[in-house]
Image (tube, rainbow, N blue to C red; front, side, top):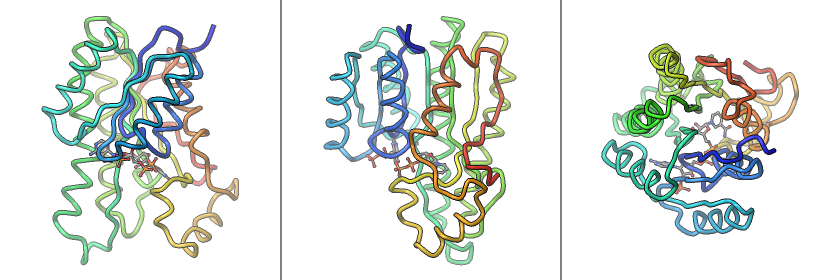
Length: 247
Ligand SMILES: NC(=O)c1ccc[n+]([C@@H]2O[C@H](COP(=O)([O-])OP(=O)(O)OC[C@H]3O[C@@H](n4cnc5c(N)ncnc54)[C@H](OP(=O)(O)O)[C@@H]3O)[C@@H](O)[C@H]2O)c1
């Protein structure tokens, strides 16, 4: 028996990087997959086809995670289409890096909306279904930067630290209903997001990582699989750092 047979997972921002790796890993373990993206229709179609070819049901939804009414509409569509929802992975995220003196108000607002408000939006819209079935697992993607801070990323670090406070609080609120809420705080993972960082800065980061290399999306996906499945049935309110030891 596979670890997620009979479960349905919704993953935000799965056309690329970590979200994509999580979608593929969950599908390997038998989960049906609903996923979202913001603009990349072509990559969404490719992922949908790849997932469906694995023998599970998959569908991509173009939905802005930072807009509450879109989140509510999305959850209704997912329930209509899949008839159930068991796992929510809040993965969608962006960066707009700059030193604070050069950071615009829009850079701050955009990052807080897409990275943190989205977690509120999707969690709130999902929880009513989880409460009815008295079961559910929410996994929120923070970052080592949310734990330690990082110069040039006050907006990103604030959003990612906020996710940790949100998740620990929500875990306390809904634990009695058998709904678990956990956080993954990745370190430096090879994706389009980290491609934006200069090679010099990448080398500097690598030197600070005890395992001396960048992580892979699939290594974060394995941690997500643990938190999504019954392997972690007594784990909630936890921050799992997947960072090669740098945290
Ligand atoms: N990569 C790392 O080293 C690292 C480290 C720590 C934490 N993280 C966190 O892990 C998560 C995934 O990172 P990644 O590197 O895989 O990112 P990525 O490669 O940049 O992919 C971001 C994904 O989010 C989607 N997205 C962006 N804005 C959205 C919105 N408003 N609504 C819905 N979807 C949206 C994108 O869709 P489109 O393709 O349509 O644009 C894409 O699928 C993020 O929360 C990030 O902060 C990453």
